[in-house]
Length: 466
Image 1 (tube, rainbow, N blue to C red):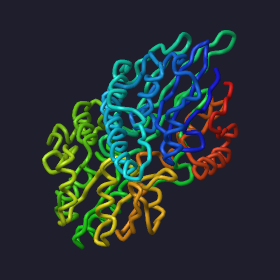
Image 2 (cartoon, one colour; image 1 turned 45 degrees about the vertical axis):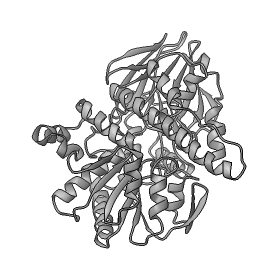
Image 3 (cartoon, rainbow, N blue to C red; image 1 turned 30 degrees about the horizontal axis):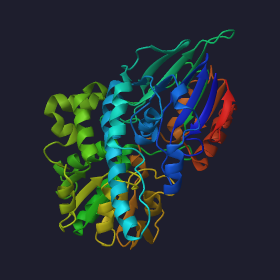
Image 4 (cartoon, rainbow, N blue to C red; image 1 turned 90 degrees about the vertical axis):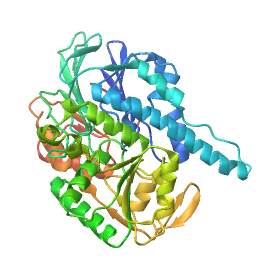
């Protein structure tokens, strides 16, 4: 087997790992690269391999940095199955449609400005129609059910605990002339004790481990600390009459925030105020959560039996925004509220309009909940840039900016170490992906301190033979 790390190599976006085994090609993930606009179009439009020669795609979960370039893959000739858990198929279908809509809408908005400047129009990365075409290739497979991917390779999904339907991918490989071996691909590793989701399953007898390293530089505190920080930031902002504007991934992060905010207000830990989820995708994603209680943890199932989705996802208390007109009307409201809107990197979607209208008011707070990729607006805000550009115009940042890293759905250094050590008796080598150097390099050192010395941090497009 040969692996080529075409994405999420020494960075955290655009996850793509091409496996070549027994004369076949398997693509683990087909994520969207996020970063500088010129790199965004160049990297995402041009695959470093021929999509027509890929035999199967396996998707660990539905987040756009793992699934978001599937429309271009299909558009350029891929015609094989895309394997994922049923909840991931459900989520990815709506997320890709939303992504296509955002690309079309952003292109229209930017082209109006470009036309006024006499510049040529740009084309959207892909369209809603392109995204809809992907649905024909999704092949749902439940957790723990083995399936043949290509001859000699059997796969199985196990719980990753990151978002609804997220999975690690276990590949049992038989190649002529060698002993069978197991490649365990972690996908994005979740955390223990987060709302709604089950805890991640640790590796079982892996020969090779392909593992994320996003937070390899630091352990996470117990999620209760993040909840306390959220309560403090929200309480202070609402108390001074401001808005809390949260760029958040529509799937996973939004549902966690809604779960906690609903309970805080019900228990009178923070002032009662409107909770606005302004993202068509988040609205649809919450309905997907409703459809897949098989993914819930024990506590969420208990609450579901006790009080239905009011307790789990805040239905009844939260206002879910559907139309553009409703979204625009929020910018005319001056009373305290919480606005949660996609995208989490603050690069596309309605969040840009909310930031544009609220970033200049010192009563407001922009709340960054989790890791932000380099060169994104969320990262510039998290780094406390005094001025930022939104839709090509510069704005002074007068709102408070707060960050809560412990809300991340990614494992911290402590769980990453435990994850790797779970396979130490059988492991031959670990490959660290989906992490910047500041996360991966400390994790490499820590793994070696614990006796796991064969650890590699591959560069983008690097090939290795297993």
